[in-house]
Image (cartoon, rainbow, N blue to C red):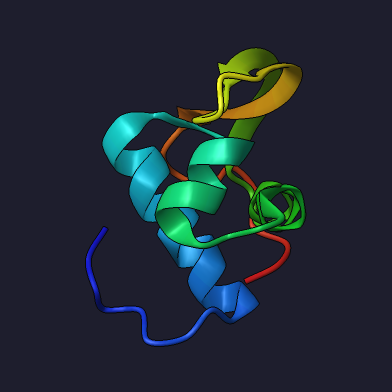
Length: 89
């Protein structure tokens, strides 16, 4: 992730998520926390959806660095790179 983000405002969190999604296509809650410093990605994803981005949520399994299995972790998948109907900027 580029170091162009000097703070963690909601706006910058949305931009970080979009950068990641444009590059990789999907991100899980745990990846957003570990790699983007976004502790609660769900509200940012909701805002991006309101802005017209087509993002679907699927559930995933994840094993923590401590070896604990977690089921039902959200994974957000970008299905279209351009906003469909922009309501919120």
